[in-house]
Length: 179
Image 1 (cartoon, rainbow, N blue to C red):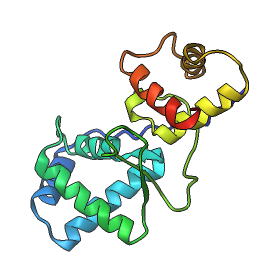
Image 2 (tube, rainbow, N blue to C red):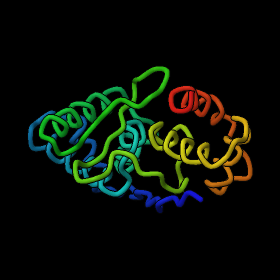
Image 3 (cartoon, one colour):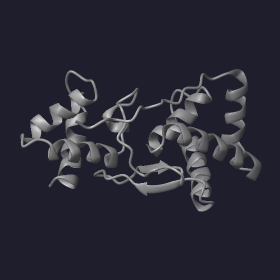
């Protein structure tokens, strides 16, 4: 049976200081503040990586007390992330999704794919490469049909059933990984 590695979620409660700091970082594009954003991004990737860029940005924004990621903040986070990738502090590849608009991020010292417990993520926050690895391992151990494979995945993740949005993502991953 496939053993999933533990998933350690990043958690940071916003404080008055973190709200002010992140507001300054988003508004002021100086190199020093970009470095602060990069340090925050690296800290989150170190704990939760490999993870999707959308989750990374959401976690960073929450630390600053943002309930929704603004376009300005997202643009600023993307700028900092691009610099971190250019400086080889963070590694990246595009996630296997229909829109290809999300990146999978990990530190260069990490494995690119790590099958982990479900944790506090949703299926749409788990990298397709991670879902694909779990799916491939479970498919190799069973001759069941696709729907049973998806149910086996849900059980492995400790879920009684798949969330509503999971089937579409799993269908896409199935086509990409199993065929």
